[in-house]
Image (cartoon, rainbow over all chains, first blue to last red):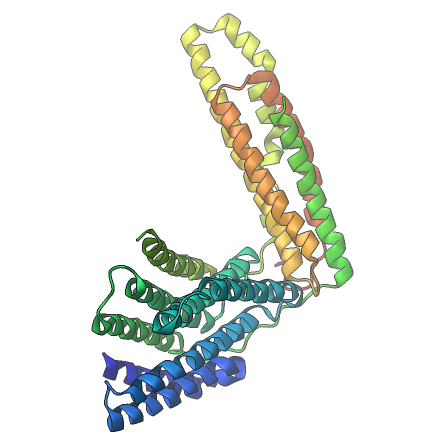
Length: 248
Length: 177
């Protein structure tokens, strides 16, 4: 499974470069490159020191937060690429998305403040931060659906991969730190399997050449105010009438 | 143990929700499909005269005096069903208007959080009110007069809603000609 993951990582990275993904998603492309660099570093330490060595353990767990932060940047990239063409909605959405992510991170910090050692690390980095990623992503999808914005390829597939990976980390991490502690080998296998599926999603998303993003034509601010007022006025009236019926 | 189950369920449900939100029928794929103006017209309100006739007190009085009890009961049941269907139509009309509101926002250079929040609340309020009215009908809300009034109120709004839909100006490409 590990070999499959390495092959998948290289394939995804190459495909992203061939497709010119950096033009639309620079942070996501940087994340793919970082994965390759970190995997190479881990492999080097593993070859010289062995998998049970403190050096490998240190390298593995210290590079993990870097990857999570890079995944956060990749998520921000997806949010921006999905909605930034719609200037008005994006102005509102970015505050909502950033606020939600900050609130979840704060909650995670409070939640894990009392714990110590590796358990604290696993709970915080491996679970709570992934919650922040998947909830922020979910909010982006809800906003896109609400405003009728369809995520263009490859954004949909990349988002699905991000959501799957976060969920596949949350589930085994929760079992690991729960009462029914998982053996490390099983935990590790579940994580690698999740990563393999994620890479599959990303490969599928990048299978076709990227199309140029469409730029929607936007109306003026005055037009929005006038139109929105007219429509909400009608809706309010309709509600008032319906309310009157319920009071009869 | 409870916490463990909650975390696992949350992980699975969050992914499921994301996958569901990402799924689009093949026909709907694309950027934003330019909607046709007709998609925003409240169509059900137009049938007010027919609905009013169906729900009128005159019909009820006439049938009560002429038809057998069984026929009258069947007629009342049918009329109640027609009322429910008309309400469902009204909800569809409201959804069209709501869609129009979102289209206005998505094609704007600047949106106001307050305005968007109000639209969201209006939608929520409508859904709750709709549920209450349907529930009352199911419980045997006095049909003839009340339903007739309801149809009059809803029908009266129809033309104004249509005018609102037509009066809105959109940038080229937002709506298909």
